[in-house]
Amino acid sequence: MRNKHKARKYGMIWLVVLTIQLGALQAKDKTETVSNSAVSSNEKVTPQKRIQFEQDKAKAHMQELEERMFRLSRLIQEAQPEDAARLLLGLRKAREQLILDRMGEASRMLDDLKLNQASQEQKEILVLLEELKKLLLTADIGLELKLEQLRKLIDSRETLNKLIKKEELQLSHTLEQQKTQKTDSEKFKALETSERRNQKSAENLQQQLREYGAASKGICNSLSGAGKCMGGACKKLGESKPKPASQEQKKAIEQLSRADQETQKLEEQLRKEVESLVRQRVMDQLQDMIVQQKQIREVTTKLQDRVAHKQKQALAAVRRLSNSEEKIISLCSESIELCELTRFSLVLPVALGAIREQMEFVSEGLEKGQADQEIIADQQQIEKDLQALLDAMQEASRPVSKNGGGQCKGCQGNRNKLLAEVKMLRWMQQSVHQRTESLDRQIADKKITGDSLKDRIELLTVRQKEIDTVTGRLHSMTCPHCLGGE
Image (cartoon, rainbow, N blue to C red):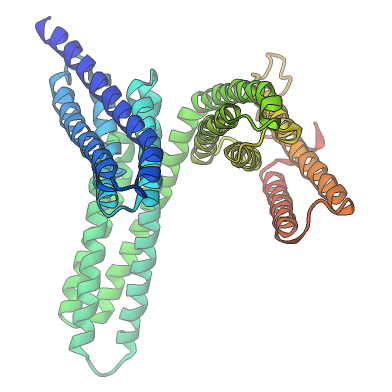
């Protein structure tokens, strides 16, 4: 019982430390505008040193946070295994993203008076810290762990495919030596060294995939077999015997290919396990984006008249709205990443990408102090577009009825999902059409020319190509019964 109270106590400590650290960084970020104006005065060093001190203090907070996360995870491992896993995942994320190192780099930039670069680095660090905070506070740590497993599995499979290509290249070089009459000891030595590297890569992959437990047993066995074959090939290459070496390499490639097939199956299994949860999360994020965008639009509308009269406070308030828009953009990017990771929708990530572009235009306008009817119309359009995608997502989530309604008689799949994809495609095509007509009117009225016109045309061309590509992929993945409506 005492250990549980102690665990809760330390749990509060790490949360407070994280909050303090974020606050320190945010306060430092706000003081940058002061430093930029003060650098030109006689007190050039003082503001810069003050901000650098805050940056170093934030780095110290981060270092302490990492140490506490590690100690606390060990302390609560038995009593609260989920929270322990959450802390270790957070610690691993922080180290993989090099947050501590980047804080040190920001401090060095401040020391060199590279204020613009330091400012950009600090903004990126803040985004990483916000992601870390969300991870540590998320209610569904099980989903986060599954998603992290999926990311690692995808990376492992990419590494495995590269290893297969390397081993195939090794085989081709060995076969070349087999055809050569004269033995070249230097070439055989180089081949042996390369083969040894491939063997080491196979062993490292096997070690990484062991964390999946029984699910990866077949993969690990195949990688182990490939490693043994590579070891045999190394021995034969050391003896300048290309024929038996090539036979071992062929066996290694077969084992690696089998491991790749089994890894693909495990990848698909993980995707199916998280699909419904990720779908729900993306719908929640879409709802959040709509609410936040509406709030920004309402504030922009209230400030419109004051901005038109060039009131400084109103202009400053509009510029601050750009930060709020950036948060929506970040949320949109997270939704896109989830879609691409789990592949539950072909169309949604492309559609969200198009909306994100509009958000970026709005953010740039707000940063310039723009609060006219044009930007308000853009904000309204973003709200409508997000709502259209949310409606389609909700339709796709509808279960198949007991009498088979919504189910394809051919593939037995959920036809509601296909219908949602088609609706999102239609929305995308309508959006491109409307933007094309709008651009055409601007050209006719001579309101847009030069580089701006070229950029808009290129953007619309890219979007149209994306629609064509996704439509083709959707068609190829859909069974004839779904298409025929049987």
